[in-house]
Length: 256
Image (cartoon, rainbow, N blue to C red):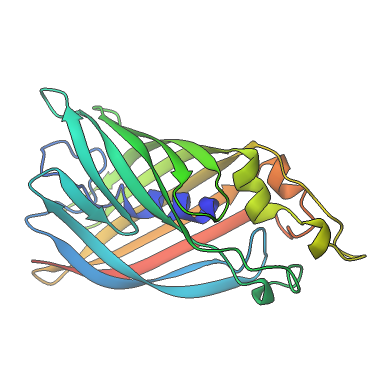
């Protein structure tokens, strides 16, 4: 789901800087090299589900030549910078999860929703008060063929000698095709208890925290917690059980 892709990017991206600059408004880990590890994410089983599932996810934070980067489930390239590198513009590709219909009480008997990749321009503006991230993306495959846009603000809460904690707020707009693919019910999928539903365009809100706790010379415990409030176009779907969608992540990474 695009909701989950955006949430995972929000949890992982601000925690690890993709470039070695002095600004510390979004960097949970002062890096001296690339970071690799493994983690576990807990997320809704299907769109709007109140059941959760766990997934093993990679922890990857690598940059090449200060331009190309891989950050958790996102890969991208910075194409243009301001002189002080507070403003960066580039292209990014995000993994977006689908779901298996059998995993949800209200989706059994429906078609599965496929994994996809969103590609589009990305902008980052680092200020003394926090970091603004903006991104537009479209489904580069044949799943929803939809598009979405996100605006996010990240601010440091704790910058102690060990614990480093960020807070983040975000809003995401999905077009009708994106929402309908993940939250809609086609006529063929409809049942007496699950009427057909066509989801239109709408927005969803996110709020969360992420951070890191150093462990050993090269390692760090990484964590994040996000809550997404579905918009009306999504929440009114007959497959949605709860409007608030949680996402939690914990992992361990080593810097090399």
